[in-house]
Length: 581
Image 1 (cartoon, rainbow, N blue to C red):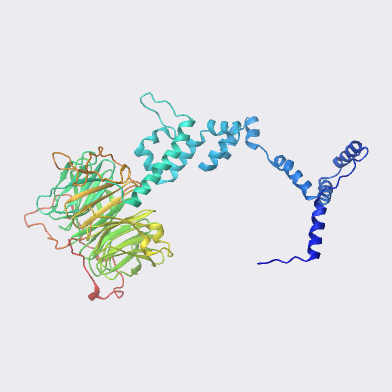
Image 2 (image 1 turned 135 degrees about the vertical axis):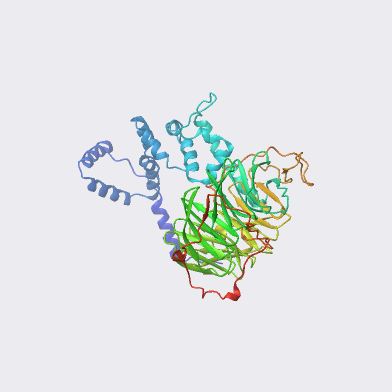
């Protein structure tokens, strides 16, 4: 585009330019004397008077003069407060100030001058930054335990003659941790993992319905009526608990007890260390499909459509507090915290109850078929259904926030944390979803599934995961451990198999993996339990079976304790009982 400038505009531009050109003036006679007198007078004025005269002087100067003033004014405005604090013996204040910096700012701070570097190094600020991350971030905490550098953090007694690490150690450790975390996240996204397989070798009927794990062991409930405990290092079975007369459908354990529920309609309490049977609870009249306990409360649910809330005073003193009734089909799963109890059923509904009063709160509607699994935490409920979908709910308002589609058959098990949802289904697949993207309504549906794992050859019954791994069980009678931490070569997936005399690799592997190492869970592990089984053989106690003295019968005088909800939300013809394994 042509631009036309008139002669008047040219004259104006020339005049403006000439005004900026310094004019050579003759030196002022007696300049030094006049300037000295002016400065003496200037010092006698008030602050406001001094500011006013300086402002007037600046307005009378050329632009190039202002530029020169800025060159020496800017350094004058800078103040080395860190150096001055150190010089006055107040290093602890300087350390406190610099302790608020992030890693990039702390790196830049070290390059300012020697005094600043001295404050950073003497204050062990890189160590404190690592400690802050370990305290506030679950992944950092778990990684510190897994890699072993947690023993150099906080105030701990060092062993074997170890000396306390110096500043430079933590300065180099921090970027190494960041790279380690980035590698783990990449492994999750790309599906790079080391696979370990446990062959459960069930005697009668095959299938592992439920499991829970920690650093040292995996506790599993099997279709052959047993509870088997596996060593995480050797992958060998260390203990078998027998006593149930039906499939073990659900379990949870803590540092004292293992509690299991079975298709024989009983709940059994075992000593977690010795495997001794401590208690048998009789209440439900059909299969116990799921249970959860914490802080002296246990919640169980059953194929008999009821939910039982128990008071746990001790392993041998567990009593019914309330029975919740409202579902119109088998209650397949429960979860709770100190605010809500959440239950899901084959009647296609999720019901929310108050934990303290056991009163009904609301019903979540949306699934088109029976609901097989759910997890509840931090105001979010994630559920899986035989309509092959996963739904994310806001528990406070009851709204469905997102529907995830991708599985080809019933979604049997689901878990989530602050980053991911991991689901397992009857199509034999385990899918990893991005939770944060799923909570963003602007995210396209095709971006939500991060990875699909197809290592199981049968229906996936149960899974659990933490920052580093997924542990899952299946109708194929195996427990698989997907380790995303120690994977190095993306072209090969090493497989370690237990329950054989010699460990071997799958047909597409060509090298022996390193020995398996236990991984710390990211949070205190919650229960990992199963829902009802398909074509389940419901075994009952024979007439010759006599309950032991610690059996608790809780069928009497319960009518006054029953909480009911309106059943008008779903018709009886739409109910669906998941009886499917």
